[in-house]
Image 1: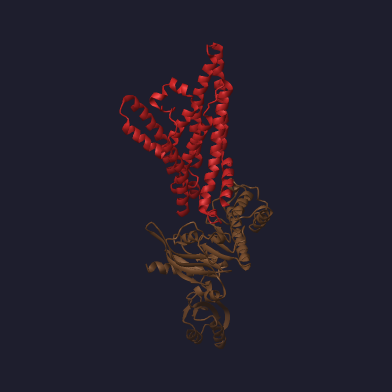
Image 2: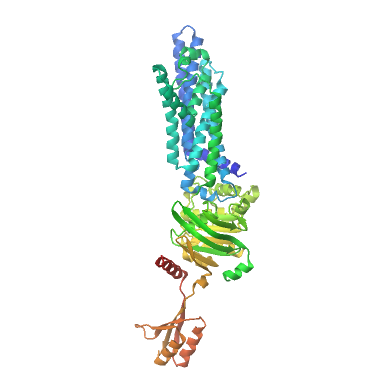
Length: 285
Length: 317
């Protein structure tokens, strides 16, 4: 059960590292600030005493749910990037693995233990953050998305995709190179998505569609986010903002995850860490 | 005890056959073979870049060999059960600085499968052994280099290893620390622990090792007990008065070479074939009516043997 010892140790390490504490403190502050802002917005609306106040609040709630979840997606991804870009490579570079690897455990257990600890922490972080934002929105506007569980699941899958890419990268590349590649792929997909929206409006979009698909295959997080945003917005709201005409906007999407993409995501999340384990098991330290 | 007699009496601890490591185009280890025996302290000596750390990394599973076979405690390299029975202290150990000494040992003890009161008792024992008792709650980030070396050795001893592999023992230690750790290793050796020590600190090797291998450019140049490596004539300093012509002639018959000290007419250096001939020198001095003031062997240190072997291997390149 060496993987369990490694997982426990990694959990302890994450908690003791100052970056995690800083992120938790900043997240609490952000959540507090969001509560104050939403409170002020709702108070202003109430003072204006508009007609259909309840409907307006629900509309604001739906919009805020998407925007807040988008910020959760970004924060969760940023945390994943910062915490796990050096999951193995930083330890290889520092030499701390030199006394761990000769112990009676398989190298695969080291990767699995670390992956598991990071998946648990980042999964918990994403869930707490998402539920925190949606809880505040529900408290102030009364809006609670029907597809909340689905959206949260998709956000978690997005985090796991990034973690999978960083795991295989960390087993093979230096920390900086791994972080840079993951960050570039993470940023390139929304740009391709944006280009697709523009070409949908202007006409010919086949080439851009293909490029976007390629980027989504390389880094499925953005596709997962669009599917999550679709789950957060009721169909009536999607119609109102014209989403059904273009299917996807840079931040908001109307498309659920296709079965093929779902299968690809499942493979991505499972196969990349396995490749990372295989690579780490056979590399020189 | 010579290597051959040990081989007949003892089981091997490490068996290396045709071991080769190629890093891309760099040949770090070139078909080396050697055997160390249980209960033996075996020293691996070589200059920087000789390939000795690569060999240690292969033995500990950090680096994969390109070619060759390695058996440790009778089992193939990488066997999990064998890993339970070995301890390893790397060169310039780098540990997680945020851990306290107790947390560090607890983590490594858990990796060895130690739990609960057994682990706690063993942690106390090893901390006392390496002279760090009372430092349990101190963070490794505040440890000096010497203390890190000691805590590193402590983690290597947690499992009461049958084989202890050390990559550079004295790095970062003050003379007292070096002495303490050598004493500790000698105690472990007396208790039956096999030790493989990789070093360019010759005093460590000289003080601890039953046998030594000298390695350079990835090849083993010499293997043997330190005394076997002194395979050259014994140099003896003689001070006697008067140093008559008759005495000098007699000494010339006994010794391979006689060298007079031009600044000290009462002193000569003799090269003898055997140590026992020193007694014959004393008799010759007495027989020639001279008074003997000094008769002292000048043994070449391991350092001199090492430097000469390395020089010789370089000149043959």
